[in-house]
Structures are given as structure tokens and as C-alpha cells.
Length: 408
Length: 220
Image (cartoon, rainbow over all chains, first blue to last red; front, side, top):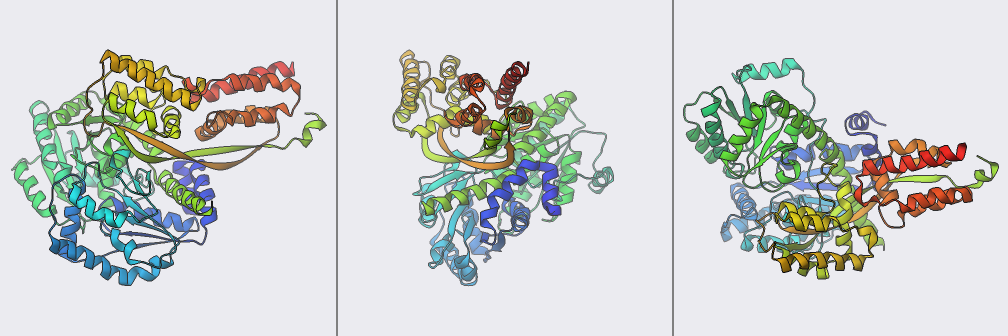
């Protein structure tokens, strides 16, 4: 067995790797392509960064293609993203034209690879039209929706579904997100990769240097939220919760750590709102991290006492799993995929308001034993359910089922 | 083991995982649940009784099936949750199970306990699943070997061999019977084991105990 598979076996267990080897055996030599719209930043890129090498290690010839576009394309896809999450966004015909033209342009480059592929996964709305632009495709095509599309804005979903309906299947993180489509919709939650720089064990020296780098006081409690500066992640709500906690625990510090994804044009505007809300409180640390700051995020999650993900809408929320993997109780927004990860009162708390978050932060800070026990349960829960080995097993199972359906 | 047993094919231990599939059918209140239960695919009904054992979650659930958990968590109806939790799928055929479920739900509707609508994201989502089977490479030559291996089996193996279908424990039972009539008692004890009220860990312990007790007696 290769070093890489051995490394996964050490963390996820022998059965997990055995399952992957069994599922990949019939797919050896097959051409598998993932397509998304950014190579850095955001959950999809995070997943693919490690999943693609793992698939290659298993003998499946896997590539990762990224579509690119101009500002109007990203404005359109950001609006689509918001609309799928329920915002009543009307996308102008000008932006939709940019969306269609960008896909057509990318198809010119990608068509040979995609039409030759045995298996294709198209991630999220950005590259969804590619299927219709590859008329001579021979493989199985599956659309992966990472977004909380539980209540999409109908005009936008209706537009997008014209591209999605012809896929062989689609998969969503939760049953709530599934839509009316003429093909089978599988339910596969995403995952974190335990071997990534972002999730691997760190030395105490590495953690210590992070305290110093960001001028954090290690003798005082720290609460952290890691996420893009996006209104759906509710960074303002986190600041409100912090201010409520500060009234009874004045020594509390807050770290908001985020970066931009190349396909998110709204980040700067939200960052300004966050800075305004924080005012001149020197215990609020607003960090704008580069997309490759994986080790820094890892260290921040490890040095924090409590991690928040107070999203108002969330497809899955990989940062929740990441923090749980580091043995931290997480206080998360009672929405979307966060509900699947946080078992309320066991691995953390689900909250609906800044007040709810403040209550649970105080409860945990005043009860370190409870915090430790919850963190322990959280880590085991992730080991059993949300590592990349489970994720890949389900993806390979999906394509095995599709293959078997074709044969029968 | 006697030379007669050398002709018996080793038993191949399998493992399994489930892949969940959205049916797109949802219920936001008890009346809708009743209506959807009338027509939902039988596989989905079985899923909501059994798949919980292999899904993410803590091992000691408060209620035994998804219908009961939903009634408790989202309709806040403990009475209904308890009644639904008591339905043992092993004692009904699929149609009988559907009828029993509807009967319990209708009783609650008549009592007017649970007529509230759930919030967004708290609807009952009907799901079904596909079972993906794996070969563990474990080939068991005799019951003694199986007894020793049982505590080390993956939860998926316990699920596959003792739950996956009414006939699944039959494969082990049929294999045991090849070792002679005296093993019919062991096969019988296994077939009588009702897995519904056990977690997979508890089920493994029960099966292990049955093997231990039987083989201890057989060796005396």
C-alpha cells in the first residue's frame, strides 16, 4: 500500500481504506473529471485539493478543471448562489448572457477532456451548462450542489434547472436541499481531509507563534469564527454575541478570520460592515487571510476555546467539522448542514440568535469540563462521519450504482 | 472439527454502507405525514426504521425510528413519539408496517395533539437508500472462528448480516446448519434475535453471547 493510503488508514481506519480500494478496483484506469470555478478559497476547492490526489492514488485517472470568467460572470454566479439560498435576486439578462458565454468559452477548451471522460462531477451552478455544451459526451455526468438550496428563489432555480435536469444524477448535502428533478438525487455530505495542512496535528511552537503573530493574549479566552466575509455567515451577529458575552466575561477576545474566494465579489463590502461594527474594540481581531493560510487557520482553531459558525444559511460549513476535528465544541447557526454536524448539546450547540450564541459561550466558558467532553465527542463524531474517506466512498458508490443501472 | 466439516465452504464476512437518496417527498405536519405514508415507496418506510443504525448520530437514540424522533423533536409530541417508537418493524410485513404507522398517526390526529406546522428545515423528509456491499476478506471456517471474530467486526458487517433484510441472518444460520443438527439450536437462537431495539454495538454483544453460551455448552 502506498504511503498516502497508509496515512489515511492511520487516521480513518483500515476498513475505510479497504472500502475505497474495493470500490475503485473496477474503475482503475477510468478517466474522472471534477469541474468547479475556483482553485483556491471556499469549501469546494478545499475538498478537491485532497480528494483528487487520493482518487489518483487509488488508480482512477482524475483531473480537476476550473472554469474562469470575467467580473460579470462572477457577479452572475454570486447572485445565483444567493438566490439558491433564498434571496429574491433578479439576475439581469446581461449577467445571464455573461454566464452563458463564459460557459461556452470554457467549453471550447474543456470539451475534449470532458467528452472523453468516463465520469464527470460538475460542482455548483457556475459550470452547470457544460453538460449541454458537450454533445458527444460518453461518460456519466453528475451535478453536485454544495449550496443550501432548501428554498431557492424560483425564477433563478427555474433558469438553472434547465441545465441541471439532463444530468445522470445529482447530489446534495441534505435532503432539505434536494429539488424536483427528473433524475435520482443522492445525499452526500461533504468532508474534511485529515491530512491537509489545515487539519493535521501542529506543534505547540507553531500554535504559540500564532498567538504572537496576531497579538492574542493566551491567558484570556478566545472565541473564533473562520469564514469568508459573507452576510450569510453572519459575522455581525458574531460581534453582537461577543459584545453580550463581554458584559459578563470582560476578558473575552474575538477572532474573525476570513479570506476571499476568487468567485466572491461581495467580500470587501461585507468586510467594511464588519470593521464598522467592531469599532475600536482592540479585543476584536479581524483577520484577512490569504487563501493559502491553511496552517494559520489550523493554529487559530486549536488555540481558540470556542469556535462559532453562526451562519444564517449554510450548505454544510466545513469550518464546523474542522474545529470539531480539533476537539473544539462548536456553536453553530441552526441551519442547513450545520444541523447535521452539531448534535445539539452533544458536540456543540445550535443557536438562532446572537443572544443564543452568547448564552452558550458563557455556559461553556464557565464549565471547562463540559467544554472538554463536548470537544472529545465532536472529534470522534467527525472521525466516524465526516472525513474525506467516507465522502469519497459515497461518491464512488454513486458512480458504481449508475454503472450497474446502465448494465441492467 | 471433524473431517466432515472440511467440505463446508468457508463463510465470507461482508461489510456494507448505505447511500442515501432523496425521494423529494416531505411532510410539514402530521396530516401531511399521514397522506404521504399512504403512497410512499415501501423502501422508504423501511429506511426510516432501520437505516438510523448506520447513519451519523449517537449510538443511544431516544427513540427507535425516524418517525418517532420527528414527532418528538419537531412536533414536540411525546405521546405520539412513544407510540411510534413502539412499532417494531420486525413484526410486520411491509404493507402491515405502513398500515400500523398510519393507524398510530391517525389516532394522534383524532386526539388533535399534533396539528402544528413545522418550521422551515424541520419537515419530515422521506429518504430511501441503496446498500453498497464490501468484501472484508474474512473467510470463517467454523463457528468457533466466527465467535472470536464477532467483537472485531465493523458496524456495517453487523448491520449486513443481522439486519439488512429479514433473510440476512439466514445466511449465517444456513451455514451453521451444515455443521450438524446440533447447530440448529444456535441458528434458531440467532433467528429469534430481534435487532430492532438494539444499537449495533448491543446487537454484536448479544450475538457474541449467544455464540459463547452455545459453544461453551457444545464443548462440555
